[in-house]
Image 1 (spheres, rainbow, N blue to C red):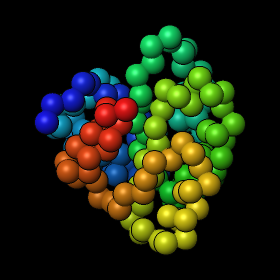
Image 2 (image 1 turned 60 degrees about the horizontal axis):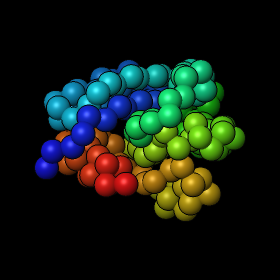
Image 3 (image 1 turned 30 degrees about the horizontal axis):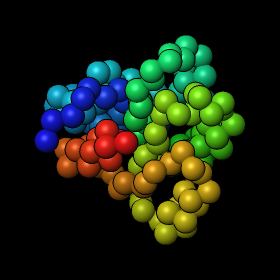
Image 4 (image 1 turned 180 degrees about the vertical axis):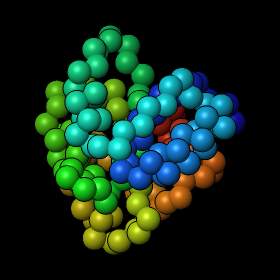
Length: 136
């Protein structure tokens, strides 16, 4: 299936996981841009400071749960405080090396988070989430 080009933001404290995710996304050929952050606070700052356009296309955020300083849920909490028009330009998918049931339940508290995926990401997961986002 062919998709329009998508933008991605990867937020993961592991440089290796960022590299792997970027590589998979780039190999999919279905990306406009890919940006990685090893600190969730820096990603939040980038999202907050990016000028809004009238026709914003969804940017897919791949958000790790377990990170020092600001973890994935801390990021989600801060993200939910952004303006509605800014939040509308992003969709969050959490990623984790463990798919703890309590994390799945907790995700339900954040309207901006769509789903939890188990690491490592692969081409099938990227295709699935692109399909989900681009079908909107």
